[in-house]
Length: 502
Image (cartoon, rainbow, N blue to C red; front, side, top):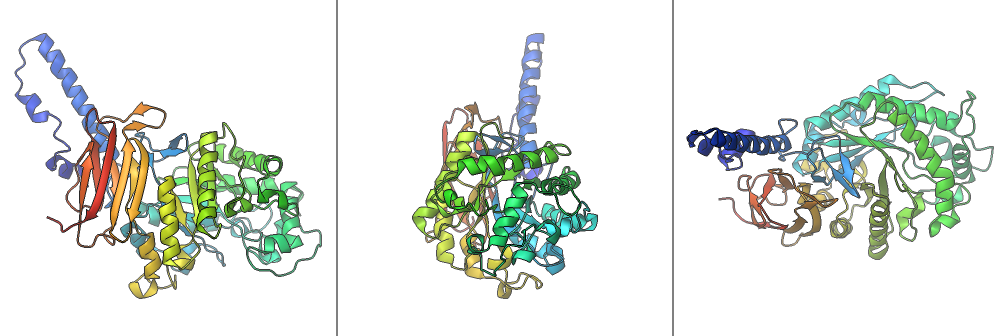
């Protein structure tokens, strides 16, 4: 929504005409008017800033990056709570970048139209550093092509150093052969996720990595890994849509994995904490604006374990996955994730969940995420949404029921603190509530909008919004419902239901 349209709809009615009509008779009145004009200008500037002279898309006023945080919440530069939501795009086959298999502008347009604002983009260490210490700059530029495409559609990017089952030499993917130190132990084929517990070679490769053993060039493995992360951060430090860098997808402790079934804080602090500290230092040496996202060991994802990560005072963000397999354990993972993020005062993003073609499971889990106010990224666009990524994402090339289940209204940027979110897919009713006090007990900024994404695919005939505590300033049936908190309102309630557009 452009500024002229906002003015026509009343958002810009901040007193310019009334101010111009006030007679200026005395120095005191001139001072009062100057103050009034200053306040008015600040309010208008805040609205314009939040609505986007910088990066405004068809989904409405976008959050401004880089994101910071207040406790467990992501926040943008105007102080609003930001809720990332989207999908994973990870190319696991050579040449390991999405454009090579057809991901492009039409895919990004589909994601934008469905209301998604974030993609977790896979970075494959095998491709990034195919030889010890040698970074492939061309590979980084291929990733940059996708980052730019997504930016044109208002989609943020989390760059994810992705491995599964270590690497090709251990029947997995992600890590290069030169970094696969197995000491010759047995290397039987096994399927995900059982290969973590059945394949000694995978376990030993992880153990040697945590021990920071030298690679074939005599350089410790983590030192070369940190170099690769540093080069990625250096290249993308000033990209306008980068959320940060995930240090490693689904780390595994090694042979001694059993304690992590119920939580292994000692192993986390012994193995993961030093690794994440090295990666954070490497990134910060070239980019101090974007955090490193850290994951607990993989067994956290199954519902019975707690985590000591990321730790109090951490500069990092917490990334967790939800793969517990049934409703109650899935909810437990979400709740433990919120507990850890709240305890350590770091932002939380569920960077993987789903991995299913069952829309009923997708709906149930999305409902659970809403109940816990946890932002999420679905696994995955390639495996569960599009059938053939080399072809355009037309209706006959999509898993429509899965995509429809993922397509839900949600708050993208909140001038306050979210307190309740629920969406009933059968009636297409959204209920959202927030306090006008921001995290940290700060009042919401003057004239800063709250934005709720309302995907047209869920409301093809239009919608109506019933709001208390805020004023609707977007046009009827706009792709984003835009609200301004009313003066002295402590709480805002929003209810969206299907209705014909006026």
